Image: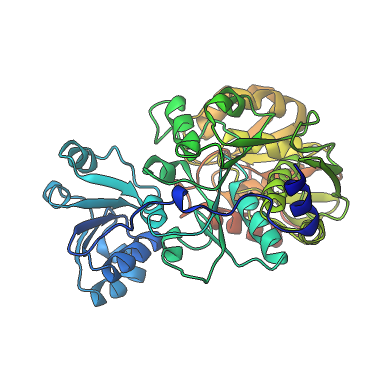
Length: 484
């Protein structure tokens, strides 16, 4: 007990040092091994380079045609590796010693399944990187909030002077931290369900599970499969490790007994025995006899979901050696992420918010909870086929008008349209103009799609940019087109 108190008050880490016994016993020998990298975006390219440096016989396979991958093509050619474009061939997959999946690659693809059946080892880039990392990892997952929380933890530790790498599903691909020597002393890593699917030994010193709500059901055959992918973050943790859990999330708590690590909780509803709680204006931290209060009055972050993210980040940062003062400085300046409940502009008393990163139902609910004023909600996009029922009470109570776009608009109109005034738009610009015509002073216009963007845009960033540009083009003389 006394050891913990001294560590907390001095700004030193209060957890035991990273023991050799909880990292892979042997470095993976890749020399002369035939290794296939599947997926050639930024992570795939970094993985190819790493494997090449390790002496592996590297090949790569990408679903997209060669002409769509010009950014990586030249670098791949310079390494003289074998490449296939526009699809995956069975023969290529079945002739490997090891297959590495980039984030987002579906492990149920037939060539991958056949390789597994043949006994070929298939792992994620995250697992490959872990085999070569010899410093503690704080891994953060959840349906929503993981990017914000990862960046917060990274900033809080950096503010204390720690040498922190931020990577995984945000920042740098994790493989770039493999074999980093003394350059880093700790890593803050965002871990997606796709990345966690392909782990074997991956064992973070600290795991953070923020929440679990339905998502990616276009990828997973059932919700339970998605949940199981998320909780794999705890798979290899032992009693000497740390887990930070959302006490308010019923799905997280349903699986709490499967977590062997030392548990800390955060909650907006009640005080916790060890961890953090909040009334929305302050965060109260309790760790091994120490009690601290953090004011949120100066925080630029909007939204109740960000209070949860801040609670989780404070626990992790404090446990790993950030002082209260360093944490407070970060809380007071951290402005959050572009495209996540991002304030764009106020026009004639109406506030416009870009939440293009709100690509699932749980995320939209968190965003709607952040508004007391009536909301005009712009939603829709590529349908993930998730259950829209949890949105009903929030649409009914918070949304004065709903403007639907994209592939999912018909289903969303059928299931939610009767709850509020609902119209449809053909483009995001048309949706913004319709919102501008309808909105009244004191209301908010919110783009929070509950869908992915791939039916109309390259990604959520392009969608958010289009929304912001449409808002900036508004003038009081704009005339909205009629709805479709």
